[in-house]
Image 1 (cartoon, helix red, strand yellow):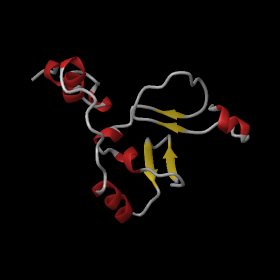
Image 2: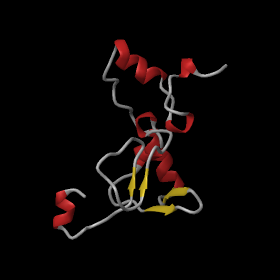
Image 3: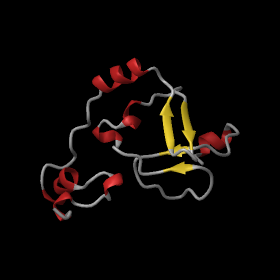
Image 4: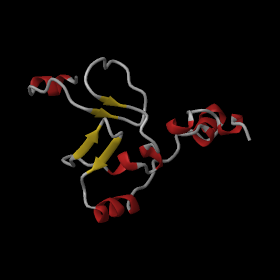
Length: 111
């Protein structure tokens, strides 16, 4: 847990990420949410104070925000500019698939 939260008496929380995570070995963690927020996936529009409902058994995550507000946020979403304009970094950004598709280069998939 981050020190700032421990100092506030928070000892555990649900963590939801569209990435990998290290250093967390307890509690509820949802990883590899797809599509990732960098592409405008659902995590991109979550804001501080939003309620998120997690149904582990049902394998569902719900952002408890009215649908119109979610749509407004998605319409206003602007992806960050790419960090790489050439080389392996660019190839990775342009060709690695989302987590639900295996995080592999799309050009290596069976056709």
